[in-house]
Amino acid sequence: MALDKVKKVVIWVVVAFIAYAIFTSPTRSADIVHSIWQILSDGAGSVGTFFDRILGR
Image (tube, rainbow, N blue to C red; front, side, top):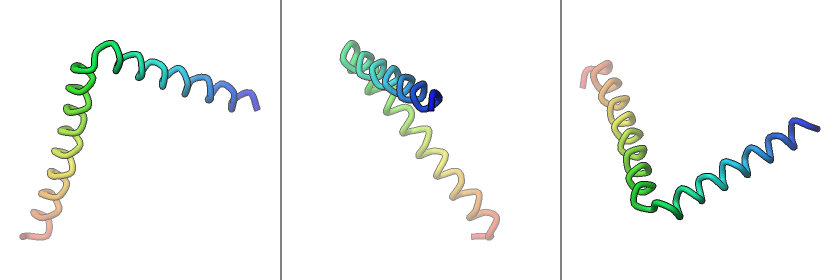
């Protein structure tokens, strides 16, 4: 029961921090989101290339 309360508090603190970061520096926040998206899309492409090469395509 206490762990659930701690989890809720931590989630709210993280959400509040993200909201603060977005409102105080929207351009930098957008750059960070863009960088994260680029990393994820590059990773997905690399996994696809890996399996293509394993299958000999």
